[in-house]
Length: 267
Image 1 (tube, rainbow, N blue to C red):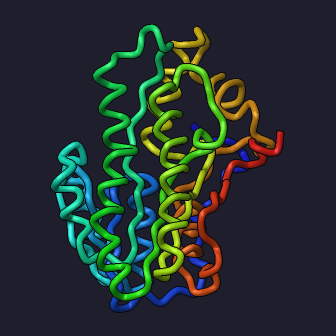
Image 2: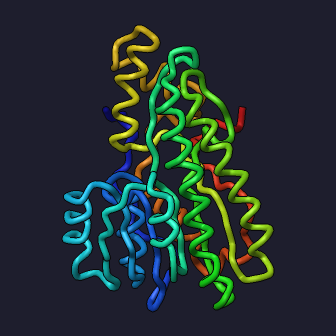
C-alpha cells in the first residue's frame, strides 16, 4: 500500500567508516534489519546478521557481496536466550531490531503470544546487551542502537504486548546508557512510526479485522491518523538514523530516543 508522497530509497548521507568494527543486527533478513545490515556493511563493518529465516539471510548476504564490509549470516531463534547472549560476544555495534506483532484486545490476547513477544523484544535485547558489553567496555567504545517504535513512547489499543515490550526497551536502553557512559558506550533508541515492512503490511489486515473497516482505509484512518506526515517511513530512513548514532558526530548522544514519527508525538 503506497501514498502519492512516498519517496524512493534514501541514499547514504552520514559519513561513516566502520572498517574493523563488528556489528550484530537482529531481525536482519528483512525490513528495517535488512536495511540496517546493508548500511553498516557499506560503511565497512563485518555484520553478524541474525534471523531465524535462513533463506532471507542468504539473500541478504548475496546482496551485500561486494560492499566494503562483509555479512556473516547466523540463523538463530531469539527465544533461545543463552544462544542470543553468546552471539553478541565480541560485537562493537549492537542493533536490537527483531520484533513481532499481534493485534488483539487484551481479553482475547493469547498469554503464550504475550510471553513470546516480551521474550523476543525485551528479554533477548537484554541478553544481547549483556553479552556485548564486556568487549565494548574492554575497548572503551561501543554503540547500542535499539529499534524501538513510536509505541515505545505512545500506546495504541489492541497492541498490549508490543507496546509493553517497546516501553520496556526504552527503559532498558536508558539504563544501558547510564551504565555505559564511563566506558565510552552509548545506548539510544530509534523510534519510528509505521515503516514499510512485512510486519506493518500484516498489521493492515489485522487492524481491518479489529476495526471492521476495509484494508484500504486502515492506512489513513487508523495507522496514520495521528501522524502529520501521511506516509509510511522507509526502512532506509531508519537505517540512516542508526548510522548517524554510530558516527563520531553522535558520541555525545546517549540515553535518548530519536523519533522518526512524522509528527505523531507532537500532539
